[in-house]
Length: 89
Image (cartoon, rainbow, N blue to C red; front, side):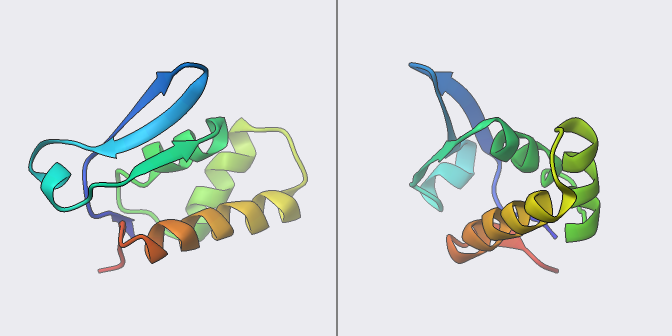
């Protein structure tokens, strides 16, 4: 799985936001508000990866309980999928 659209992540007034850029801006017009972990997940999903790989990479970078990281990463990926941002092909 990977992102369907090219997203640009920027920090604006102490808040991270992601927006589609280029031609993809016409296809996805939402603004996504992110924390630091979500920014990293977005970065990881720019390349084709499976959920386990994403969880592994997040666990390597951020200190925390693996079960909690797995739950939260999967919830975020599900949210991205609901928004139509995940290409599962």
